[in-house]
Length: 464
Image 1 (cartoon, helix red, strand yellow):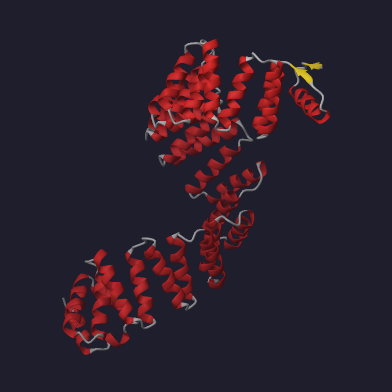
Image 2 (image 1 turned 90 degrees about the horizontal axis):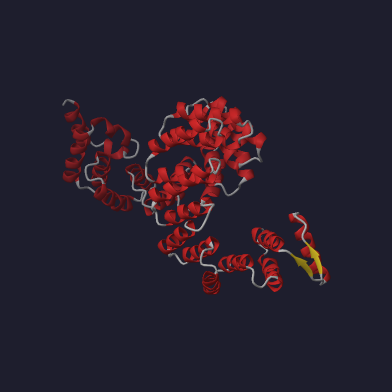
């Protein structure tokens, strides 16, 4: 049996894999087995991790360290009963070992027993000289319970012990956000920056808080500091670009989005926002170019297809717009906004049956805005489905009983149904509500507006 105990992690892993290939048996020290096992766990090769821990326990059968790693593996595989049995035995042997209480807490957490997990971690605290990890674990357990104040206090303790623990800094800010305490988050971050003015992460988080509050100039100033401190900080440039876009400083936003492209691989998000900025500047040619790049980068990004839809619609390219909105609908067929756009496009193409399909889908998806009902009714009127129009307007009136737009349409339909008395009552009620609106319906109901009785009503209210 050969022995290897070099301090190099890669050396341990190479020798272990060599051993497996040659069926040799090498001796490794405890540190080596810890390195090997965690390496395979980190890359998801659990079977090799199990092989390593089995060999380790055969060479070091009384090692608490290896047994705790075995517990980690069992927890990972959700074999909680086996893990719990090992932890219980270890606790009897070493009742003051904080790592045992940590693993017990992990098991309890997996079983959704977060209060018991917290008690176990508090026990671990009483035995440790390095409490940072335990405070972080406590913070996470309180997060599982939505106890954000308690979680925040534990993450703050992590930062008191290690000011560069940025994971805990993010969690502190997250807790403030969940408590709707953005002002307190800003105060905390300012104090943090006073102690560490060159923390690009803190400036970045401060900018995000200002942005969320709509204080865009302050946000921009914070993001400026972020990229001054670290000229390669992708997140800083991205947030700066978004802020400039919100401030309608589109060219500057584009410049910063391009820096993002230089610092990292292209993303559909960046392309989409560059396209939107060009569109806002009136440069539809460049906007179209970047919207095309967006969907090429991520064909399943429905927002990219919607952007192409809108731009082609504005340009009058209705057939292309229809093709794009159909692709968005294939990705998300339950989005009423997409069905609205679908109906608008098909109307432009005189595809009336398709248009009614879109409006009907909007209503089915609970998009009950008045304009949907009116547009749907007008298309049905145009294609001559008068009875269906009446039933539709009756449904719409239940939600909008005082709508003069509906009154006008119902009055015109009643005229077509030869119910003159009721028609005039509705028509004059609508004229009283909004006289000028009747002009918008003349082209939809030309035969009604040619009737003398209707003309008389209009003249009567015109004089009022």
